[in-house]
Amino acid sequence: MTRIAITGAAGRMGRVLIQAVDAAEGADIGAVIVRHDDPMLGIDAGAIAGLGKDLGISAVASLDEVADQFDVLIDFTTPVATLANLAFCQHHGKCIVIGTTGFSDAEKAILADTAKHTGVVFAPNYSVGVNLCLNLLRMAAKVMGEESDIEVVEMHHRHKVDAPSGTALRMGEVVAETMGWDLKEVACYGREGQTGARPHKQIGFETIRGGDVVGDHTVMFATEGERVEVTHKAQSRMTFARGAVRSALWIPTQGAGLYDMQDVLGF
Ligand code: NAP
Figure (cartoon, rainbow, N blue to C red):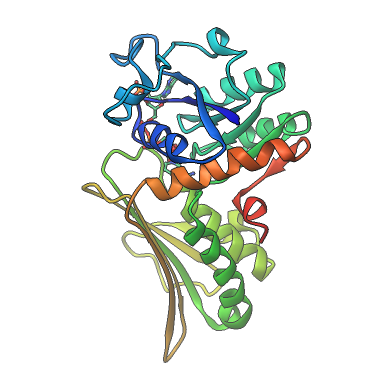
């Protein structure tokens, strides 16, 4: 049995992650961690997740309290919290699965550096469908990229704090890599006013926020005469949670290193 700890356990993803671990074969909840002032502190993981049963694991306020009680940490929180939790995992020889998005380049460099010493899975999206889409995008960029205008449109619920989404950025990166472009040079984040005509060598990003949308992404390849759109719509957070749990069961079998969901799926 792989014992899994979940940080940010009272959050939107945290609650669904508890459900996913509880339902997974070969995985047990080892610990759940919430903020020291969270109303869920001391509450059973089953109650936090709304499972209608107790799991016998009460929420604690720090990883130090449960260092001996888990093998892999799943962390969907914020960049600052994740980096602190990553340092804990490195220090205690634990693997970590990171779902948090919105890291700066400097924070990503710390993450890559730490992964030299411990197993880290880091993916902006743990759904199988989005990872399939990344491969479809490579194919579309190879076949149509040269003559297409490429735009990425994403929509998420009103609570999301980073934009564009980590998944939208990853989609843009995959297309840019395939085209031999540097995303930093070709990205255009929204348009307003007298923008002039669209340059060809550009990847546009449009962000929509509203309601309870779990996550919609479309990448358009628009040419004169036709348009190909690769679209993914997540209908439930469980799709991300299942992928994260799958990653948590996979990572202990690997050595130290930085992996993503494409590695976990064997793409
Ligand atoms: P959320 O509902 O805000 O949950 C985050 C949880 O982390 C909250 O309980 C929050 O507590 C806690 N937290 C934040 N900072 C903390 C800190 N310094 N110490 C302790 N706890 C802290 O957000 P969410 O919708 O679950 O999303 C979480 C992250 O996962 C986001 O970055 C999101 O983009 C990402 N995400 C990734 C995927 C994927 O497949 N990779 C899928 C969905 C979401 P408070 O509420 O008290 O701040």
